[in-house]
Image 1 (spheres, rainbow, N blue to C red):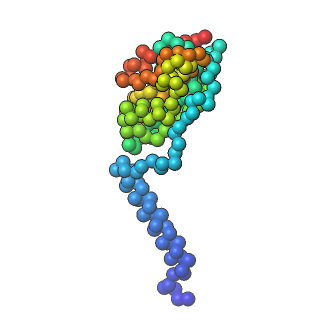
Image 2: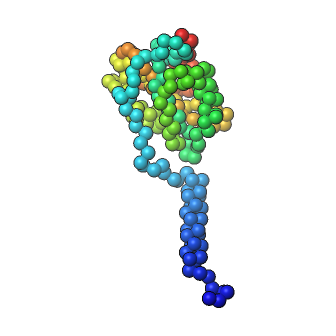
Image 3: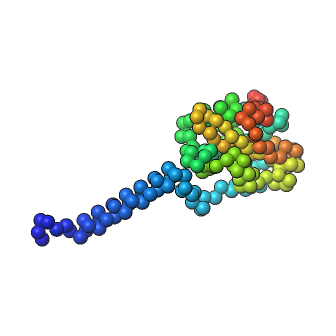
Length: 194
């Protein structure tokens, strides 16, 4: 073997590394252009009828939905826009407190299912997808213990989309609500100590 030729194993290794580099560059370029589609295998569906429908806990913070005491059963968070990222776990309390002061205490007490969704292009599209993937029983929850709310939330210069599914433990007429502007969260939801 002369000093000028490469071992075939090295050629394969160099070729494989070059292929990985090309794939990485293409993926980065597509993400920066917003053309990378989420893999279709991610299932966002939650079967609300399989969740515990007992009402709010007897002690601790109580989440009120239009004045009706409820228990938070599901919390969904998604970044707004094509390339947004979810906040890291340590910033989740700031996001929740910005949505509704005291919501971190409700989450700690009620122990809801927390779902992190991929980026969503619009708040209307998110609300529709949220209500479809977390379909409430009956007539969109009316006449059942279930209710839900979805909308947009700004945290600094970043926008997020949030959905909540709640249960009162007894039939109510609340149903599904879409938040039209950020201030409306505080009109619909309140937190009270038991």
